Every structure is written in C-alpha cells, then in structure tokens.
Image (tube, rainbow, N blue to C red):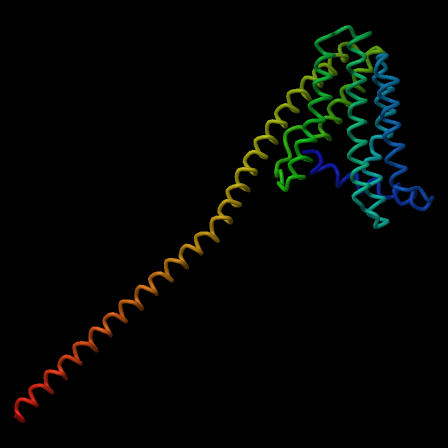
Length: 267
C-alpha cells in the first residue's frame, strides 16, 4: 500500500540527487550494488549485537538507493530487463539481511527463541510474497492485488520499530518492546498478504482456463453447425430432386394416356 502513495513522493524528493549522480558518471547498477551492500552491512554488523538505532541509521541511508537507481535509469532512458532483474534480486538479499539480523540477535544476546522464529518467518514469508507475484506474472496472469503488507510496509514497520527500540540504550524506558510488536505485525500481515495473492492467482487462473476452454470450443461448434447446414442442404436438394422427378413422371403418364385415347378414337 505504501508503494502506491509514498513512492511518487520520494521519487520527486530524490530526483535532484539522482541527477547529481548522473552528472558524476555513476551508473544505476552501481547505485543498486552499493545500496544493497550498505543495507547488508548495517543489518549484519549492528543488529546481531543489539545496536538497533545505529544499524537503522546506516540502513536508512542506503535503503533509498532502490528509488534512486530507478530514477537514474528513467532519466538516462536505460530501463532494461537486466536492471529490473538485478534490482529485484538484490532487494531480496537486503530483506534477508535485515530479518536475518533480527533473528541472530534473538538467537544470541536477545535470548528469545520465539522472536527468533518470528523473525525467520518474516524473512521467509517476505520472500514467498514476492515470489507469488513474480511467478503469477511469469505465467501470464496480472495478479491484480497489492496485499496488506508488501515490501515497503515490511521495511517501514520493521526499521522504524528497530530504530526506536534502539533508543532504550539511551535511557528511554519500555521502548524496546516496539520491535517485538512490529515483528509480530509484519509476520501476520505477510501471512495475510500471501493468502490474498494465492487466492487471487487461483481465481485469475480459473478465469484464464475458462476463457481458453471457451475459445477452444468455438471452432468445434462452428464446424458442427457447418456440417449440419451442409447435411440439411444436401437433404433439401435430394428431396426437391425427388419431387421434381415425380412430377415429370406423372406428366409423362398423362401424355401417354392421352396419346392412347387419341389412337383408339382414330380407330
């Protein structure tokens, strides 16, 4: 949902920065790679040791590269399948690093196996949610549903909660519980989104198959109708011919009788 409303706003805000990078000769692919590297470093260096505030600051500085590289590609007119593939692939890597960092913290210093499991579920469900849409589109379906919690929502909820939870080390009491709450929200929201997309793909698949069956049945129906029409035509011609032949035979008999009567009268 955030993609629909926030992406356009941040694109306008980041356009000057994208233009600056283009003037310096930086390519969109370079921005994509550096952005992903920064996110992975921030997540796997800071989060496993409980430094959520500084980890979130580092990640936030690099996470907007996802918008900057696309902006640069559009300005340069270089939008390509390779760029889209690279961007989507590295997005999955970045997401895995973030939730993997949370899982490592709760498996270690955080000492909470339940939240470790929730973090892993967030990681896995996020990958599957993205896969369902990509796979549905690859088989020709529109997958016309956004879902409750997409990638933008997962990142915003998790990173904001992590950054605020990190303020606990600066003396803010009770705020550390925001991250566990956020992880549960993301987990439930991802599950709902996954169900929404699976149901949508199922419906669209059934509709596409029904249309294909209807299209396949139409030529057969037309052939059947043509055959019936041809048979009726042939029957009609045969009947008319029979009737015509019968009429000619009757007329010949009448002529013969008249001739015989004329002969007898002459005798």
